[in-house]
Image: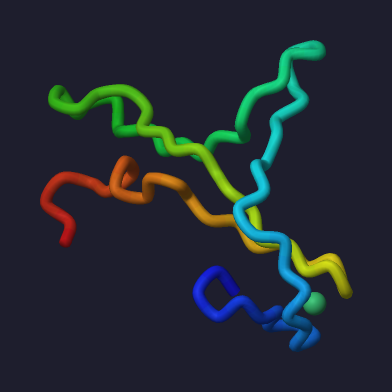
Length: 81
Ligand SMILES: [Zn+2]
């Protein structure tokens, strides 16, 4: 959808690109919705969470939403190709 500009569900090309997924949690504070992975606690290196913000592609016709991580490399584990 991000690369084709076409909805995979209904075939529409009315796509809203790069909409920000807003997290309305934590009271009224607005922030970009985040995706995070959490390392095993026993791992000494790179301990803690790895995060990326998300961007959404939405179909104007059927409402289908596809989410993309802005920085997928942030969640890549060391040693994994
Ligand atoms: Zn659609």
